[in-house]
Amino acid sequence: MEFARQVLVIAAKDLRAELRTKEALNASAAFALVILLLFSFAFDPDAETTREIASGLLWIVFAFAGTLLLNRSFARELPNDCLDALVAAPVPGAALFLGKVLANYVLLIAIEMLSLVVFGIFYNVRWTVQFGQLMFVLVLGTWALTIMGTIFSALTVNIRLREVMLPILIYPFLVPALMSAMQLTVGLMAGKPIGPETANWVPMLIGFNVIYTAVSVFLVETVLVG
Amino acid sequence: MRNTILFVLGIAAIVILGIDIYRIAGLPDERNQGAIFKIIFFHVPLAITAFGCATVAFVSSILFLVKKNFKYDAIAVSVTEVGLAFLAGNLITGSIWARIIWGVWWVWDVRLTSALVCWILYASYLMIRHAVEEPTQRARLAAVVSIFAFIDVPIVYFSIRLFRTQHPGPVFFSSSGSFPPDWSLILLFNLIALYMLGAVFSMIRLNQEDAQREIDSLRREAHAF
Image (cartoon, rainbow over all chains, first blue to last red; front, side, top):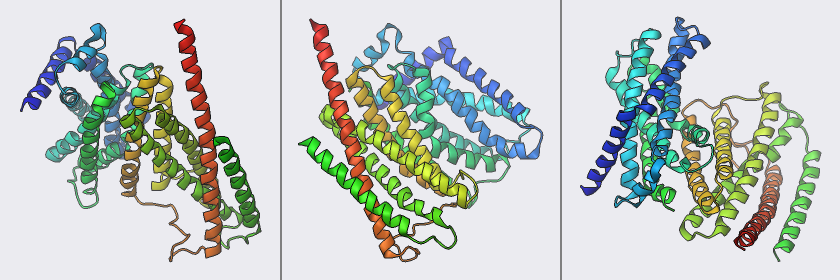
């Protein structure tokens, strides 16, 4: 119970700090819009084939916009040695980590919902047909993105080339999760519910989340403290 | 003592490889593929050796985190570099074979894709090592990345296997395969030779890593004056 309270305190602190400055949120949302715009030049946005692959592109938008957001997660604590204070605070590393994950998760979901609406309008996709199942995939895929992004954000916070290292590190690790999310989203965007040919991707996504959440929570003290 | 072992292992690996290459050159061409099939004698052992390296890196990364002994960090980075080179060899030989048999350098098949993802994962391990200056922090973060990478490899493999696969199945030491047993034996000897070669390379790299650490500590001592 105490642990849950600590997680929520950290998450509330992060959300409050972010909503006051909105620096990562604005950058991330603007970046998502720009990528959505650029995709329309790479492919004919009105063609039927584009609409089929566009949902895969959507996850690339999420992944790109996500790294901008996640990069700030621990980097925000660097000025005034806030990170040292957080590590020294009487909260376990796991609570600190999960609190940050929770805050990033909420912010990332917000960015994704915004992108979805813009995507639906610009690319003429009726994404609300399978709304429930799409949200299910979104919730799972975003958790994978957030958990990996946050642990690697903690890992890269003190190193040179932080902004560059984070995407280089997390995208290869995210291959199974992003692939599952893309495969599921393509069908759902076309209006088809999760059927026998795509059902296998759901346990893959859940398995990825469970394994990496466990490993990250286990290793986060090592990453932050040593 | 270490140098003697290194020397003997190296000579033995070269001798076994020499005999194997001589025997492989003497084998008849395969009916459908011609001479190019002989690349399998190197392609497969390279992959297995690279996997062996990844396993050693995983174990020594855990040992480093538990015991905080820099010896294990040196082992991890040495075998990772050697494994990366071997995996690159595996990808290149596979690509050459694919160009001749499939007509393309690359297909997004399960094994090819997972081997490539695996290569990129361990390349990012080396990149993060370069990005961190402080030795203790570098070893700690690198060990965590190595553990993450080793866990990711099977997940990547199973996830991509949900797609259809184009890669030929195993042909050696299996009842369904068409590989004669004495050919499998050549392959096995090649595997042993490459493992020995991998061990030799890793040990040379380990010596360099030891020397580097000694230089670093001497430099720190000099600065302390």
